[in-house]
Length: 85
Image (cartoon, rainbow, N blue to C red):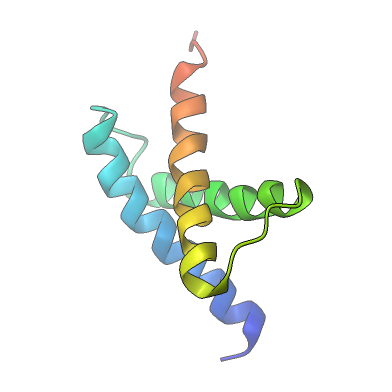
């Protein structure tokens, strides 16, 4: 696999895992596994991007994974806090 394809796969896997764990931690039913996975993957990508823009550097794959997990948990938490109509 090329770098971009591997990165996308990594974000999707992180999104899948965090969506399952996050629905248990946040005690929500979620939006369904596909949507929760996409939200988690987008959150992981957003976390890495925001930390990078802030100049936060991490070493290696484990550091990037940790930041991605933080982002993947943060986005669903933020979305849960927004009142729905």
